[in-house]
Length: 159
Image 1 (cartoon, rainbow, N blue to C red):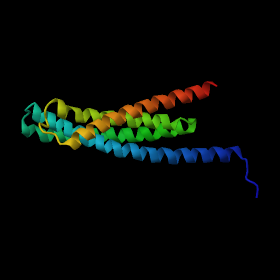
Image 2 (image 1 turned 135 degrees about the vertical axis):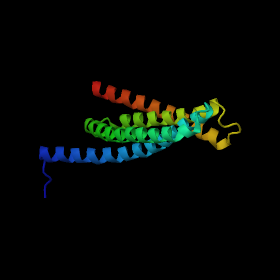
Image 3 (image 1 turned 60 degrees about the vertical axis):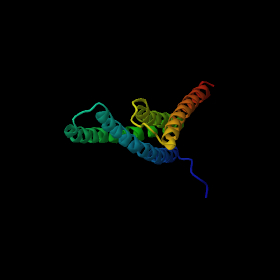
Image 4 (image 1 turned 30 degrees about the horizontal axis):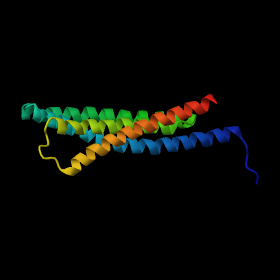
């Protein structure tokens, strides 16, 4: 049997493949987003302790942070899936994915940095330093990869 060259069928297959790819990439981004959610929440709690905020106010601040960060995380997941599908149909999903993950890695690095700057960890374990350095270097590498992929794609389109 000869495969059909129906343009509507080909477009439907492309749309379906872009949908599956965008969902898979959104799952990866959402899992990293949960780590960001917990890191931001932990950062706020540690800053409350550092600035000697009344501990009785912590619970209200913690609950409001949990709710607001949860809503932000959900919006981020929905937007990332929409954005990845749009980029997959245009053939530029990988630069976009690396940019999303780079932003999340910078956020993780930014949440870990105040612990060392403000002296929250007086005798930090070596794995805490290793984690912070790996987050920062990973964020830098992902940013460079994202820019490189974006420029290569733009150069390919110009040809």
